[in-house]
Image (cartoon, rainbow, N blue to C red; front, side, top):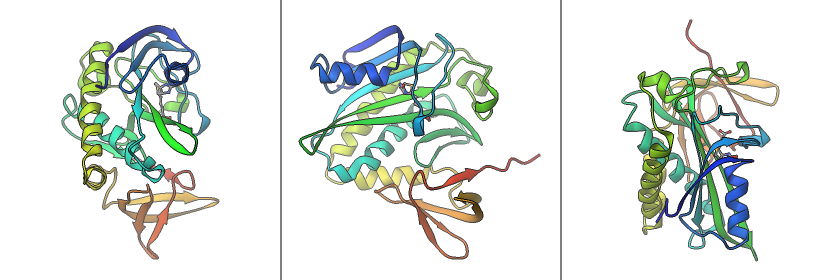
Length: 249
Ligand code: BTN
């Protein structure tokens, strides 16, 4: 059961690091959730730092047993975690909530949360994943470099209890994880993911290397390839393309 036990840490380097250490030391298994008030070395995507003011946000890592999934299903798991986060946020945010490929939670053109999944592979078998989720909850000021960040409080005007929210998120994760384990789970997850895909059907500017061009976002497949059209239909792999977000003035 995801969220049992639920371990509340006041300060830690990173809940992902801590969860992985606990797993490797056999002190924790599938379902264990680690929440922190403060991370001193929070990890973001692509080797970036994840910064968060003490006690203001949701910083959570969950251990997932992936032994019944194939190595090629890594994107589907990431999509399932993103959908669980979407399900959880949609209780509080009633419009403009989307998942930006591959797994950012967006409100309009602003980022409300991000996900970092780290895997444990032993003897060539994908045994576990640590799903790390960071959601901006009560923080109202962000650094210049994270100018696109937005918090739940900024969206709704309300204040929240991050620990309670993290437990609700665990319940949403349990549902999506169970869905993923069903026979047609992978296809269902990808279909649901595509329904809430950021800028789907819209024209966006994407940058690859030194060149950027406009494309219409079509869909994402179960391997995480982003399909676009416009001129020549193309597909992109995460990490090879950058979004250029043009905000209306
Ligand atoms: C991103 O860059 O969008 C991913 C951010 C993931 C941050 C979360 S916070 C809880 C967990 N522990 C970490 O060190 N990172 C993830």
